Image (tube, rainbow, N blue to C red; front, top):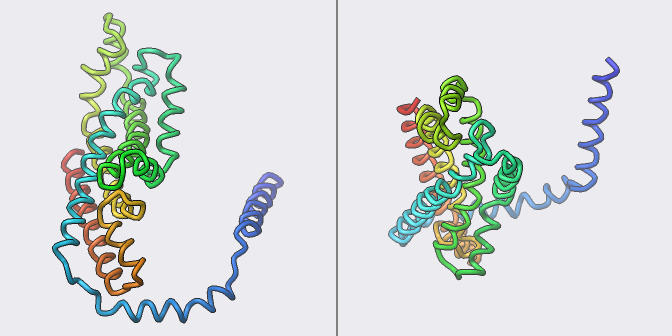
Length: 249
């Protein structure tokens, strides 16, 4: 009872501190609702003029996500092997590899894209690089956990027979876990589709670029049309990814 009360009090203290930092003001929200309603009213009907440009930007978004996820997989594979305790070829690098994955996953792709825009200039290439670094951390985390929860018996038998950790991982562990690894790859690709839709806000191409232009011009009918395209794209990616994952498991 005392422990439960302590947990409740600690949780209340955390929420109290969060409220003190954020300082939510319901009065400001209430005062801003009429302005929001005017904007929403001005967004109807949605403006789909120049739909070809929207489709081109949507294709750019899918390309950023696909290439970024592919590059992320190439970056994540060696880190995954180092961060998987049963097969790590250098056990001393296990925790550093985990820390690298945590760092990549902890920095949002939006931030990476902003940095690469400064490095390589505006355009989808910066988006690909930003997506790749963030997604490699997420993918490495998912892959390493899948490999660590696999049945250890075949791996232990291979190591006992004289195989190296790397050989056992490539010949036994990865093939056995391939459906789970591919499923994780598809899940990350689906997530990067969502991420890539807003990278254009920092100049990294995709639908976000069209969205930023419309917001800057206060063209809310155009904003609504772009949001509809974004939602349709995300739903299509979600359904495709889910269908492919069901075939894998």
